[in-house]
Length: 290
Image (cartoon, rainbow, N blue to C red):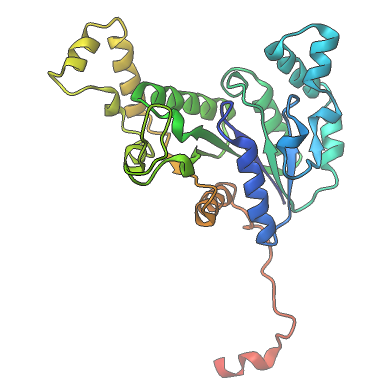
């Protein structure tokens, strides 16, 4: 059985860094794992491990922009539509990997996960060729600076989950950049960020969008033209509690192992494998059980 993990999320969330760290962790555990690059704009130096399959061997964003005059977003869509028309290339590249763990590093254009049919089509194709597929969606911890930004991330994750329809985990990345103490000199974009500040976002509470009754903020929101929209978002997340986040600290091997164990569980990794018997096992070993 072959396994594929789609590493997804917005630009700057740390997808390539996470992919590299996950590969290192898998190799340390003596597990067969390989990197697949699906970002036609990726720079070679961004990868610690050389991709065994690279979309740039088929088509690159740089060539599309130079030859067709497209911008970055239009060129990216063209690259993926070209890949969909040449899936036999991908099948040939995948043909040499059996019982392997493929880490698929995806681009950071969020519309590819929420609107474009490319990734859902790719997922269905991988399933047809006998691969178990799941997705890890990364959100940067430093992005969670206020409740409105946070819930925009929650809604994008929820939209991508609904669009792809595969086993899914959400990861709050770059937790090593969140300070453990208010006395720490490190700081986020808007000042000191503590683990206590971030922890409440791991399991989203839609009431975070609702200000305290009677507060100045609540009165301002009530008179805002977006008040009804905010209330609708709260109700949506309350009715469909699909999103929660795993904290990821790449400086902590236990944190990586926790995320990996969730990925393994969602894909039912190893459940089809036959148990391995010791080479020195014989009938005499069971004499005491008779």
